[in-house]
Amino acid sequence: MSSARKPTELDDFLFDLRGYLVLEGAVERDLLRQLNDEFDAFPRDLAQGGWYRGAQRRDYTEATGFELHNVVEVGTPFEQLIDHDAWRVYARHYCGEEGTYVQGSFLDECIASVRGAGGHHPMHSGGYRAPLRTQYCYEHGVFRCGQVNVLIALTDIASDDGATMVIPGSHKSNMEHPMAQGFESYARGDRMDEVPGAVPIEMQAGDALLFTDSLMHGGGSRTNNRGERRLVIYRYGVSWARTRYGYQYSDELLARVTPRQRLILQPQLPIHPGDDRVPEEVVFRTP
Image (cartoon, rainbow, N blue to C red; front, side, top):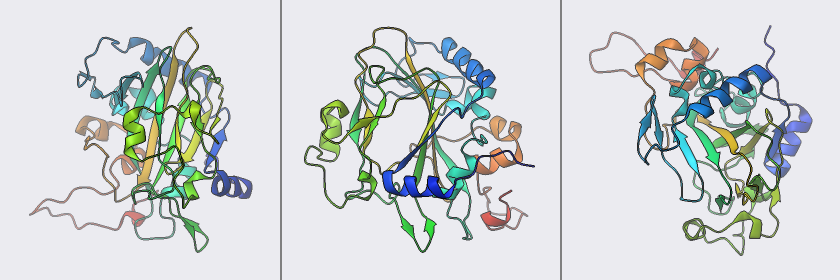
């Protein structure tokens, strides 16, 4: 019997209305400890573009802090997050094209984020002219989100810790925020703290923030000088997608994970000219 959490009618209502949900106590204490142990071991002097156990350092901006992409390759604790019971059904429900021949979610990005004092993540996204990759849609009684993000807090994150900030409802906006100018705003490093309508989402260690990527969001300024703000970010998309930056999951990882985890990492197995295997629709392989 699966113990996975499932979206309730209230969850669906609030997700449609606000664009986000907070899943309290999502990650169990033992796994939280293991993840923090892994964070302790990250080489903070790793150069931009450098590799650590199959993950690459790629900081979004100078202010966003230390960020490891493809972090699922680092170790077992990160593998456990691929199909974690606290959110795997949510991801499939909101962005997994339920009831179609391509049903099933795909792990698009997986990032470890470490931020010290003064850091922040510039404002971005929003429903106005959103790319198809991240657009929000609820139509004919089903959700068709391009991407759903799960941000797992490994430390307590209050407003002064650089809490993620969102503008509730902005995923459905048909107007551009007066302070937003697409990529120009992001390139300027505009801070979410200064954006009217933005609210911080405070979390306890182990909580997860789940939201549609078309929601206008960013990381508030971290004014706390103590310790680090630690997050793991897993982005899920439709089963026919590819990873945003072209990262490929290693053969070793794909051979090691469970069948369900592999379907999320690689929903459709590659077919090369001359292969004997006849492909099936993804929906027939989804457990």
